[in-house]
Length: 221
Image 1 (tube, rainbow, N blue to C red):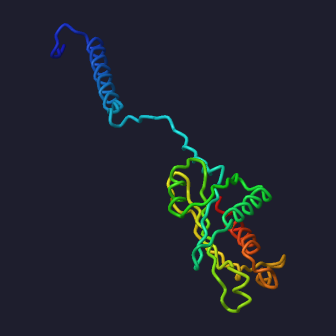
Image 2 (cartoon, rainbow, N blue to C red):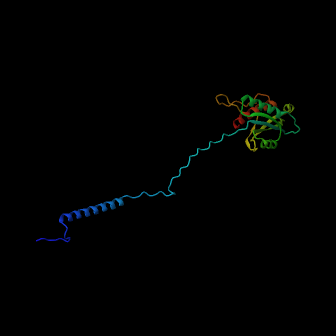
Image 3 (cartoon, rainbow, N blue to C red):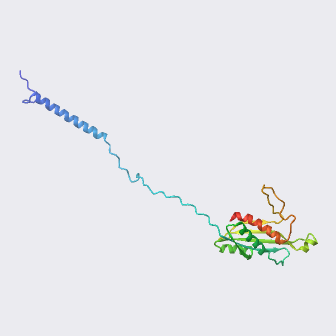
């Protein structure tokens, strides 16, 4: 008995071929769909996320400190008796100038003559390349004995002020008592006061004070 299938006129071999082709098509579409799901497109970076590289700038080197090339030496003498006229300022300025040149200090010493502390301050404000060193020389009459009175005045102390150029600000202020100047030897031991056993005349004591002033001021230049 000849039984017909649902597609009359088609042989079984042909039908099998059609079924195989349809199965292959289904498998091909499934693999394409699966591969499409696995491939994830890379996100486009937003402008905010983009890295902007800028050139690195080297640190600005610190400017070297410019020191004045000269120092103006000035001063004024004050006496407790009044009416005292001397060349103390000139003598002290000469000694300081000599010591600056002897030690070859970086500032060239220039004698500025007699002036008050206020005048020295005003002079420093006008300067652009010079310190102003002011000396306040204080002398007094030693009335401890008749002989002391006959010798005349002695040096009591010297005030000194180092003014900065351009501003007039005080770089350093100090006082030298000629009776209390203390030196040390090469081992650091303290020596007796420089005035002990030496002349007490004003000029000699001014030279010793000038040495002490230069010793201190040279570290500020």
